[in-house]
Length: 191
Image (cartoon, rainbow, N blue to C red):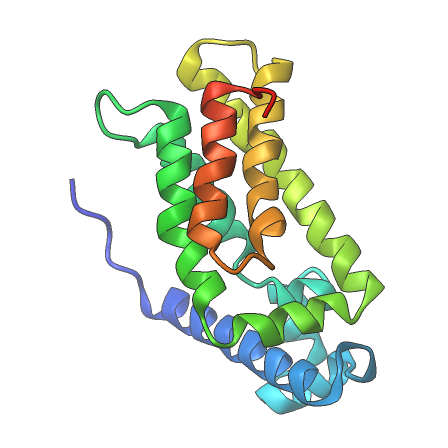
């Protein structure tokens, strides 16, 4: 089945959203998150403040403009895995294929510095990941035939979502990701 073509209106909305996000990030990186207001972002993107709020729920959301896409990709990693591939292996592959390239981007350090420079952004990032816990845990539960509020599914989702934070400052991120997933796969053994 082929997807319906995206209409001009949807393309224009997506382009406007991207222009706003790009302008916001440029301003935040140049002047600091706390020194830039929504009006500044709207002016830089050549839109009204009303338009900014049509596309983003608030100032913090401007920094994390790919939040919905990341959540959908996490759920898809579980639901669309190949035949015979376990949930944990699918999540490991997703983290290795998606997170590692993002973390290796030369701009990643600058973005991390931006987030860490503001208590509001750090708190928003934590809430954002917590929101993903629910949808990822439900997808895991559905796939393994567990109740949607199963604590083991919630724990696995939360552990997976914490991987980027746990390995962010590691010299060899791939090795660190593999070690965490090995722990999730085999359990803790006294060293």
